[in-house]
Image 1 (cartoon, rainbow, N blue to C red):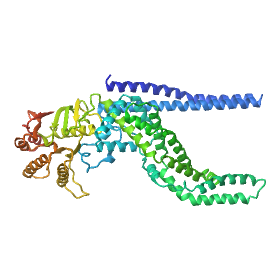
Image 2 (image 1 turned 180 degrees about the horizontal axis):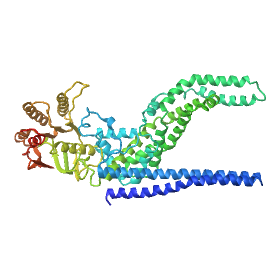
Image 3 (image 1 turned 30 degrees about the vertical axis):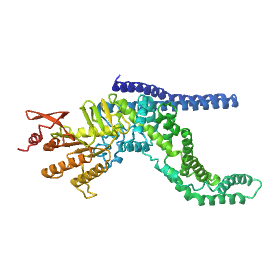
Image 4 (image 1 turned 90 degrees about the vertical axis):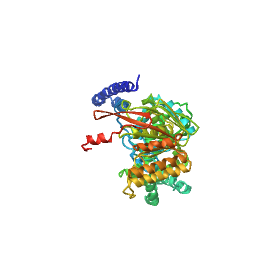
Length: 591
């Protein structure tokens, strides 16, 4: 069964289950009303005969009503669960069939200064991040962004591939993971507040004598209040309550600061608890997944306890009841002490828990990518520098119906593939195709190819250069700064794969040609490797001077009755046909 049919079947199945529980749930209000009416009626009838039987009947009726309410809650929960599953599968189907992107796009991670992020469309609308992302928590999104921005070492790649392959066919588990994260509406909550509080020194936990006094004092106060009605003067409990108020006044600022740091995170902690519960129910075989499971062992119970403490502290917002229980029992102080004791016991575990949950969500996202694209492969990683060999490599973000795939190979050092071609022929798209697949391969993901062999390498691009009003730099100067970085890194023999598109485009044709020749020669001297795309056809003559270092490729265009036809296939040799004049004439320029 193909992937689209699989998702369609799941949508149909979950729609039926959703309707089943919804129809059941619709009947419950009538049952509840019937219980209330008949309970009142029978209580009234029985009460006139025997009050004890009437009371017993009322107790049974109340218990029955509670059971029905709980059953109603379970039906609502199941209805919502299957509705969420239906929505998740509908999103996946639209994603595959129509290239619709419905998950967060990671625009907050856009960094134009990064080596390749902006040029390869890693973040933003219709980006690689949005294509992959199935995380539900911000901390998990941060990890996904970090993976995309930084290549892994060979061992990490191998372990990630094993984990992704294991999770690939655990569809029910992966979708339960998404539901667990989303159902508490915590996707925008940032765990950094909690982590910041974890790292700060505790205020009260080391004041053991003071804590003991605060434990004993409320007991004495309550006893004295009780005895004041019979045996002791009322002034004693009044003085004790006044002492409570002094303690509250002395501790309130520190309590307020601590509460501000960790408040409004209850939903986030519930999300982590639910996600960890989903993880704990599954058995895993791969080394990384077992390690992550071990990291979060017993975490759900501990986080549940923390959530309970935070709920108690949030009770401060109850202006009617809180002043009474806080005055009598020092409620806030004791909860903050519990909070600090929790921190003391879990200071070394908390970051590990959040990281492990984040990695599970990220690995699950890549497993979903692999499942949705069964024709993609996991690359073979070579320890020898340098090789990239791809069969039927395609642009990962293009719909399969529109995607045109090519074979590509580049081995050794001091090698530049020079690609010439007319406007819109596919040069820039091919550069991004190679770049994105190298990024995917270098972080442990599957790639959009039939076969793929790669020596992991850092991608470095100069493709989409923008001016900057903030830094008062033109696009040409911005490009020169990027070229300066490229020269510096290649001189230092950094292992980078260059993707350069229309270099020195901001100057006149003559200077551009001279500068391009000089730059390519310098890069070859520095043992650089990569691809250069250009409209400058004469630049391809460099292969005559440096036949062992430069190889020419092209994207051609066919012209028929002034109409352009592109096949987007990579060809050997130099481009022979140009299309700029035809396009200009179509736009009304008389040439």
